[in-house]
Length: 422
Ligand code: AMP
Image (cartoon, rainbow, N blue to C red; front, side, top):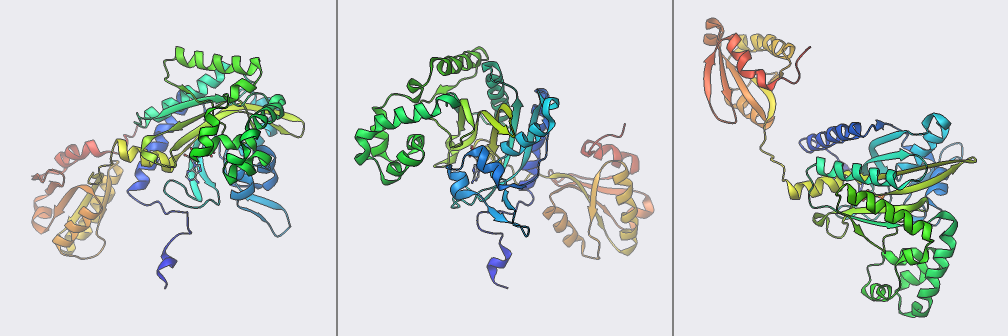
């Protein structure tokens, strides 16, 4: 077998133990924090009609133009693997009509974008996101950002930067773009080739350009908010005032646009220094979408889980030597093996995770297996122990070892119980 047959597709990754434990712990923490804000979980399909994303994100956006995994099924229907979570959630909300009026929903799951893979950028990646449904009010935007920040601090990330801007109102978008294009026009020839193209197709994307020559030109152009209505600027000021009242440190970022068409008013991005070139940890904003004459509005965000894990690894490196709440039974001789199989069940009935080697190996090999599984304790039994009705309990973290009877064994292991039966 060629060695790459063992590998997942480019840009996709297997997630095995012990990494999965960190992910599961982060998801559990997210669920706890979402509950504090009254958010309920939603799971929408991974596969949707391609049109859902084309209409919601915008046909001219990079995600739709270059990155979407779109294909026709056997019936000739145009389908796509979801590149983001908001469109599917909004489709669901539109299907519920009034019943979803003030819904607060969160999701956890995989997204797909056919991007060029690099550190922190994958073709299958995972997002944790939330959507607070409802018409625009600055208090709701501030609450969404507060929830977003709470999530990141709940995970133990302390070095995040939150940058905020406005996209203005949908009805003034064309005017904002043409005013901005007009200011750029005299500098057209000094812009990079990509930006000259962006000037035609999607002029605000020039603001994202990392090229120093383009950045120098942008430095002389007024911030985007100067091209917006007074109402749009006042909305952003209000959101920032609410955030200040909540003592959330936030930076105005006049060049922040975020790539998707559905945004209006507030957009924000959260970066982390551990991430290098792909430093966006999460992004959010307010949006409005139309479904068959029904407008759905909300404010929400998505966090990239892979990037959260990279940032966490830097701020709080995982202790890979950490042992699990697992008891490993070691048998000395065939009779002990049968006895240990019964003991396994007894331990599990007491909510203790337990394993053993289900074959006959030397005691040394059984200890090695316990260690590989990162068990925290082993219980060794041979004929003598069985006859005396005792157990040799060893704590693998400390190396301490002692002979105990059954009630004492249970007492010693009680701290490892997965949960108490009520
Ligand atoms: P976006 O929907 O593009 O605003 O993405 C929100 C977050 O998802 C980003 O801040 C990243 O953390 C994460 N993300 C987006 N695209 C990728 C990707 N290709 N690989 C890994 N993470 C991604």
